[in-house]
Amino acid sequence: MVEQEVALEVRGKTVQLWQGGDGPPLLYLHGAGLYIWMPVHNWLAGRRRVFLPVHPGFGESGGFDEIEDIEDLVFHTVDVMDELGLEQADVVGLSLGGWLAAELALRHPQRVKRLVLVDAAGTRVAGVPRGNIFMATPAKARALLFHDPASRLATTLVPDAVPPERMETVLRGREAAARLLWHPHVAQRKLTSRLGRITAPTLVVWGSDDKLLPLAYGEAYANGIPGARLVVIEKSGHLPPFEHPERFADVVLSFLEA
Image 1 (cartoon, rainbow, N blue to C red):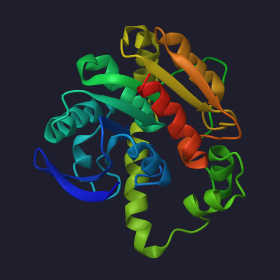
Image 2 (cartoon, one colour):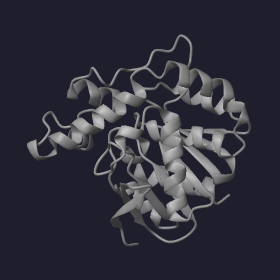
Image 3 (cartoon, one colour):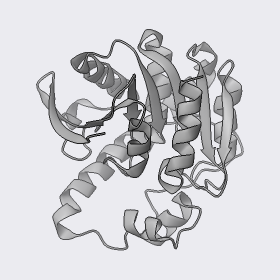
């Protein structure tokens, strides 16, 4: 497996793209906080051709001014798939990327072969509060995101201070995330009511200790999508692909190859 980072031109804007591996295509839609190639992608790429496009406003991807809501991001993702020649692909989405993946499967069912939603945003569950990552200090953010907020992984991915050379990129990413996630009530209410229209075979994967989006949100996805199956990753917070990459990849690949 050879990992590559390339600049993809999509409708006049540059999209940062990570790719690697061989096999059937797997489109990985990242969350709001981390959009680089990680060990989990190596595990997935052992048996799949993994494409990880960076959303507009995150990393080195342009086109942020054209993304006002999740629908715009769906259109953009379809354009990316067209540019990559992906008429249909298995789609894995984490957090914000999970919401995007669900909307993609709902609006463009012919493009999604199998769907994996991982601690996905996008649903509404009455009476179950969610964490607020935007107002959190780094320590609080680690507590919301990780099973063990004191772990080396947690302190590396969410450091107490951002290096000056990365500050501009980090702030742009936060702005992009806030535009989509700060007040998504109407859009998420609509998706919740439409989950029954999703036809792709669906696996919902959730961290047992997710404090940002508790397990009830995963249950809402699993109960709302016909035939969906829920797998809970123990000793994991909001980011099972990063806390347990090998276990996560095994669960996902077993589902995709069933």
